[in-house]
Length: 183
Image 1: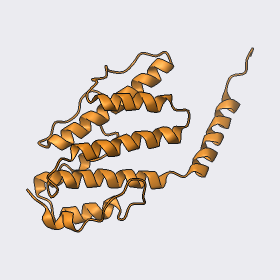
Image 2: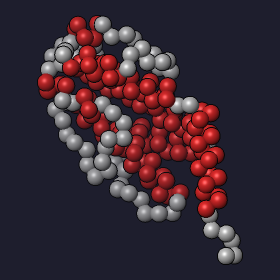
Image 3: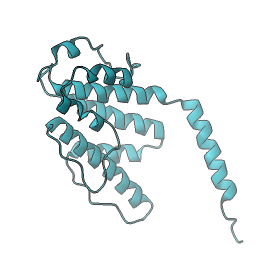
């Protein structure tokens, strides 16, 4: 199904910019424009929703590939954390898509957590653009738009000073509550 009117009224999204509209406002707009089946898949346009065990299968190839990528990314990050802490790894990484695994390993190697998050999100943005396809007025454009909006909202929520202050407070609490050597 084509969504000419809906897509034609959407403001253009540019990587690294502030979102021109909230995802909530966009979802309200979608509510009256999308078919029931297409609207039912909007909740899958999110991050970190994949269970490690399995991902849901939908009627949308775009959504299925997005969820598989998110699962691979999450598992690769969990696997890297486990290896660093010398713990048993979670489930085996599927290596599909391979770019998600490579991206997770590169992000994990970064010392600055904010840079790692932004690196992962840049990869997500690129993945959305590669998955959307060429049907500009199709439902995949709607799904991609929502994912990009949510990425933009995520970036605008990062507050470096507040994050660093929270990190210092958490670290101080850990040091304060750590068992003393020789006790």
